[in-house]
Amino acid sequence: MSTNAGEGVRPLLSTELTGAELLRWYWTLAELTVLARQMGVPVRGGKAAVTARLAAALDGLPVPGPPEPAAPRRAAGRQLAAPVDGTTVIPQGQRCSQVLREYFVREIGPGFHFDAFMREYVAGHAGHTLAEAVEHWHATRARAAEPQEVGAQFEFNRFLRDWHARHPGGARPDALAAWRTHRSRPRD
Image (cartoon, rainbow, N blue to C red; front, side):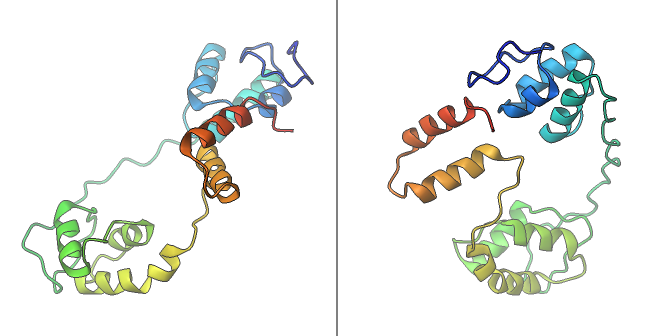
C-alpha cells in the first residue's frame, strides 16, 4: 500500500500502490508502461487498457488480457496518380495522398484540409468520384465547424480546450502551468 494513500501528494509509481491509488492520479503512458513491464503486465493496447491491467495486478486480481492483435494490414491497393479530375473514381484502399490534396486544394481552395469527415469519406467511399467528395466537403462544413468531442484518452487536449474556454485571453504558458498543477493533484 502507498504511504501517501489519502494524501494530496502524488506518490511514486511503484508496486507498493493499490489499484485505487493508481487510479487517483494522472500518469503518462510511458510511466505506466515502465511499471507494467516491471510487473510482467502486458503493455499492448491504449493507456486505459494498460491502466486497468495495472490496477488489477496491484490489487492481486486477475489481469485482463491484452486486446487481440489487429488483423494484418491489407495492401492499400492501387493509389491514384496525377492527373485526376472530378470524374476520377476513388479506388478501394485509397489513402489521403498528396495527389488528392492537390486536387482538393485546386477545387475547394487553400482552406482545404483532410479533416475527419474527409478521411472517412475517402476511406469508405470507393467507387464514388472525386466530384462527389468535393460535394461531401461542402456539405460537412457546418458540422466540421462545431466543436468535436475530444476522446477520453486525450486528457491533456481536453484540459487545454476547457481551460481556454474558461480563460479566453489566456496564454499557452499559463495553460501549461495550470495543466502541471492539475495533473499533480488526485482525481478525487
